[in-house]
Length: 64
Image 1 (tube, one colour):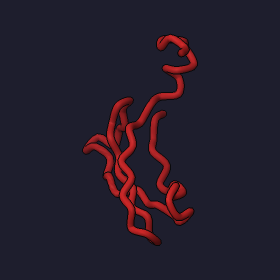
Image 2 (cartoon, one colour):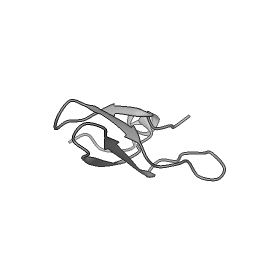
Image 3 (spheres, rainbow, N blue to C red):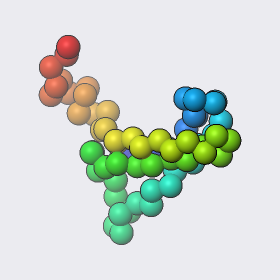
Image 4 (cartoon, one colour):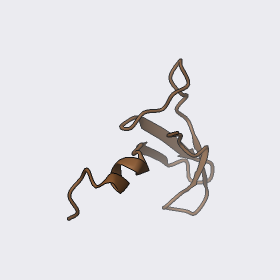
């Protein structure tokens, strides 16, 4: 099941970034959903796109 991590590490300062984006009403995350994180130390915002690891493992995308 695809689900964003509730916390990531800030690339800029090494602090903790917490998930800002709530799940859809049905609670399901899908490949391509955009999620936002905010760092508690430097206050940087990080916007990431969720990717299903299973898609990459199947070889659907050509390796470059």
